Length: 225
Image 1 (cartoon, rainbow, N blue to C red):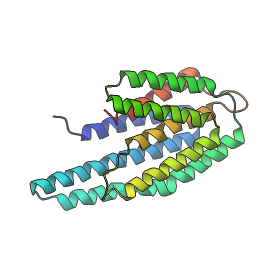
Image 2: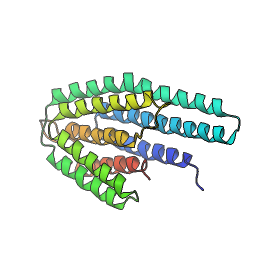
Image 3: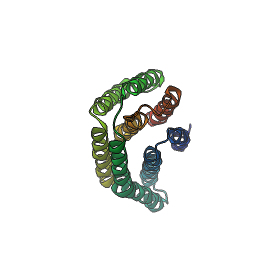
Image 4: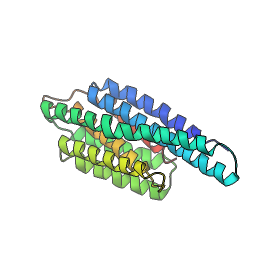
């Protein structure tokens, strides 16, 4: 039987590849947000891993419960610090940058996002329920993107606050967080659309953007595998 730590390592490796590709798009703010969100997700996964270990040790009557809970708290506190400080501050910087550059035509990038995400969703072995939820989430992000960069940034801040609330009550409730994490990942793709399509004309090639979208979607779907 495989250890669930493989899931943590697989996500981190996949996200690091996506992050490097995101840096190639040329947006410092998107690149920094990718780093922050990778750290958020990694710490969420590790925190929950230690929480489950503590529960198993308690059930078995074994030592190590306190140590596992201490590790869980450390990772969860790292998540909350990133969500309260680094993430919203960087979203505000992104908003300012996107508003200053103006908006060009994002529709070609929207279609690349939509088709790539749907192809990966069809080919990834996850439950029908999870696939339906992801599909609805992707449609929501596309609708948000079509309302403009401010709407995308507003949604990032809203969903980031939602995740912070879920992590604050983690000890009492085992609320699912995958949908929230996937939503921010998809919103980062939307943010990149605007970075690639300023008012003066596109700055990213189709292959660059396709590779970025593909790597982000692959990394995010690993959370549901």
